[in-house]
Image 1 (cartoon, rainbow, N blue to C red):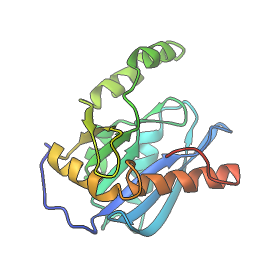
Image 2 (spheres, rainbow, N blue to C red):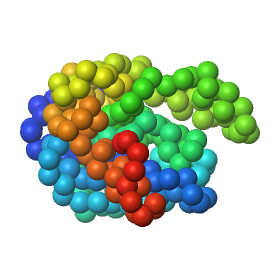
Image 3 (tube, rainbow, N blue to C red):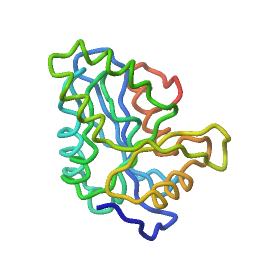
Length: 196
């Protein structure tokens, strides 16, 4: 059941990104933000490269955090982490009670994804999780004419768009995700690089 709700400028958001794929264990980093311009905390955990544990690891990381009671939204950088470790956003929403917004720089190439999943014995399971994430919507933020794409669970389209716009203060990528990316790449590579 998704709904629209009142959004305060300092809504607490947990944004999660992953680090570079250097080992079998991939670090994920969560940044807890108030709106788009105040960081309150950083979380970290590990998922398995190309595994299927991203959803359960995220649920555990979130529920064990001292910030859990304040977080109102989870923001993800796409739904595949650590290679092809697919996040089930419906389950993430159900298990944490927190709506999920997925942000993508470009529209996914589903043919390419389907082709890559043929290399996994459980490729069909992963494909079902990807399909379950639902409709992909195009969104243009005020700061940038380049569109981004979002998916959501447990939140209405208007509220999701409002939150993405509220937090996209320096680029078309929400600040909590941008910072999670910088921290994750900086820790693993020694210096942050690439676009969030």
